[in-house]
Image (cartoon, rainbow, N blue to C red; front, side, top):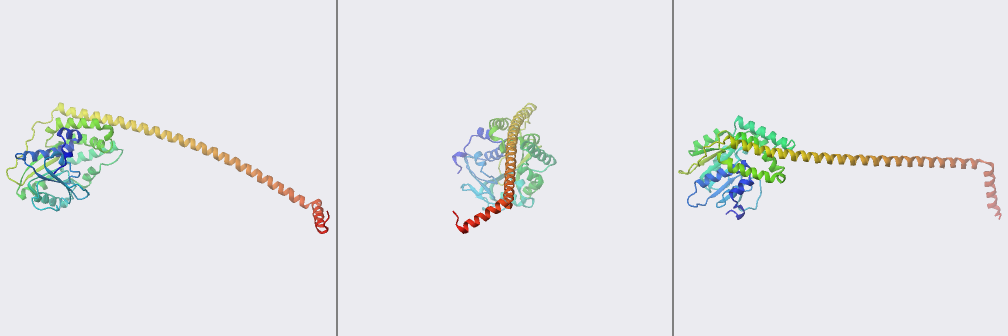
Length: 360
């Protein structure tokens, strides 16, 4: 059973989660809720659902999550591979995956579909970006936007998409049809808006969250409340396949209204405001860094001057040492001359005789 901490209001989720994250999980929730009878409680497995985010959208259900690469003491965590799920047939009512399928190697994608369907009793919900020339270009552009905002860094998952290639819709649809199941195909995140916003959202969440938290959450609440209900145009970034293992499962109704021009322009305006704030903030950071650099340069200059003074002092001391050495050499030469004089020789003879005769 999910912990109480996961019982978060939908309005809070709308503010906390970015448009792309909220949208994919909200649609999964809506499909499951559409097919819930009289407070029915489901067992749900979210394949690749690191952190069990889906549990926040389905707080009354038993939501488990599976990942092959992490370790967790969470009792709702199952360590396993979505291409070879270590569970029996129909172990869960619903099996879901959100933006996982595109990370599965091409040669294993049919295994992933087969295993997800095998473990589900009622239905499978698979959400992922799929290949088209437009989506591929949007991902390249979004990654470039992220690099501009992050100082040249690629976004790891977009880079992986670009290098490995996205899955084909045809593969999924033919596989489902050959398996004898009906499905509903949904669309999420209008491609133009996704490309415009994703670089900004990733930059805020990965790099500048503390500085832009309030602005980010206000934008999320606006988008997820006012735009999400209509964000289902066919030219979208993400496709969601609702695969029906049981007969009688209901399609979810999609709002036919498109994003009108006023709302569309409002999204762009609010996004540009965030871009502008991020730009001002980055310029402020650059100014501070330049000031720090100038201070360091000044400190280096002062240290160099100190070094020059020390070097000059050492030079003067060396010169003093040379003068002392020369003076010693001069005295040594004077002493040698004295030793060669008749007086010195007579002195030595006198001292020798005195020693022998013990003259007092």
